[in-house]
Image (cartoon, rainbow, N blue to C red; front, side, top):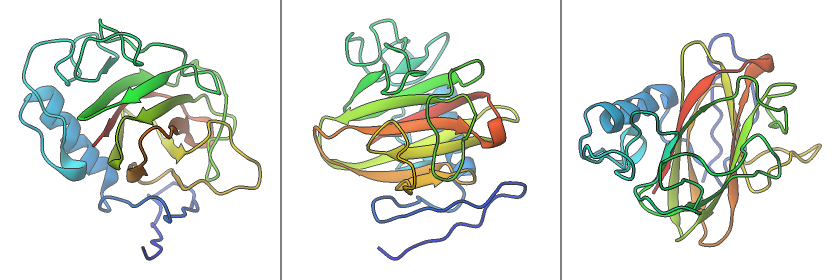
Length: 215
């Protein structure tokens, strides 16, 4: 795949991305992600495809594959011990690195919502996130295939999205995906091989977000 250089959003610092493993699903990451959230959490429709949907679902509460009410996660089932409990709360401590949240990622995927405000500063990305509180999720795919990652920040939160194999940042390295401007990516998942999705903040910023990781 040819290298693609993203133009940073207005007011955001430029960052370096290596797309040997990752690709951006379109150029409007935040807009596309917002569409995905709306279609799945508000209308409870069937979901779209690619970065503008996926998951979908019908009303029914915990385990329906749609975030709703007081849920902090929904992976389409009510089985405990897979990173999202039977009552749709996140299992573990995502403010620890190596991460305390181990998610079994199976189709159609998982929705997560949280806030980095008041969390620990446990890691960073090669393009930013220094001295910012962050949350890290370890996902182990049940099957190989393309996994989509959409991050939708809430309010004025200016996030940094990082996706890489390990949780801790390795000094001098460049993350396969790190951006403070585009929050939609794809990942070539390999069954049984964990990867990490990390949400940090630009120039120490913190705030709430919704994260959708899906096949």
